[in-house]
Amino acid sequence: MLLLGVNSASELDKFSFGKGHKGGHHNKGKHGHGHGQRGNSATGASPPPSVDVDLHNDLDAKCYRSRYFDIPAGQTSQDHYKQIGEAQGRYWGCGKKLSNIEAQLYIDTNPTVQAQVGLKGESALKSARKHFSREGRNEKHNLFLRDANHAPFFCSKEHDVCQCSGTIHWGYESRPDTGEKITSFDTLNDFATLAVDADGDLLSCDAATFGSDPAAGHPKQCFCEPKPDKNQARVCGNEGDTCSCPKGSMVLYGRKESKKVPGAHATYSEARHDSWTGIQLTTQNSIKCDTNTFDGVDPLPGVSKACYCDESRHTSLTQLTTQQ
Image (tube, rainbow, N blue to C red):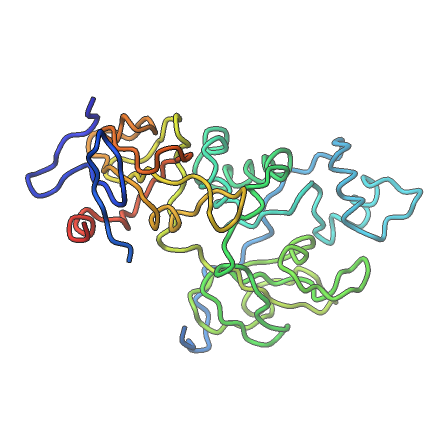
């Protein structure tokens, strides 16, 4: 059954890219920063990501104790958090504390999480962090929330300037519990931070940019968290699921698992560079993610597949019809 109609004689709503299989029919496709001015293009400092704190959760208490190294043997994790940890913005939870970008990526690559927490917004991000702490951190494919080209990096010392296209995070230079130099973004996020969105300009790594101080009296530093790939699309369903995607968007049906990172979900870019088929939603906002929906075309027989919702239509019909 064809779920979607044809918009016009020149624009088809279904297309195939790569080696799709349907009773002997297939289409074969082809595969084929500069310095800004000192200034402030930030949209305003934001507090650390919102996280639920449940001091009665024993697992969180164990994780807190294992993460920080200044808790006396006779003191409970709960008492230490109330006396010291809360003021220093320490993370009460298990696994890593997801930034806003990471929490959104966690949502975008997990259809099950989307169904439970929603797609966007502060409430969805907060619920996604809790879901990751309770469940997602134990699943291997969730450990790779971004590729190496978009990994956060040290940007500047305090009072120096940081150039970043993404989010700048300002926090402790050294761990307040051990005095050890902080060299990773994940460890920076284990303590209090402030963040601003930036668009490539040179911004001062100090209170002039962030408006307040996350760690008064302590030396600080800035990390840059790059913006996700503009061509990124969210996974709207694994094979057999229902994919929810706004009308007018493109849905790609292709590889589920990454070839580059065993156990990880394929990125949209990976899926697009393998065999796939796709559809434009013209009359509805959900489809069944299976071969029947895509007119019986199976782009990767015998391989686990998924559906990707491309709301920005980075994969255009014009591009497809000229590259086949």
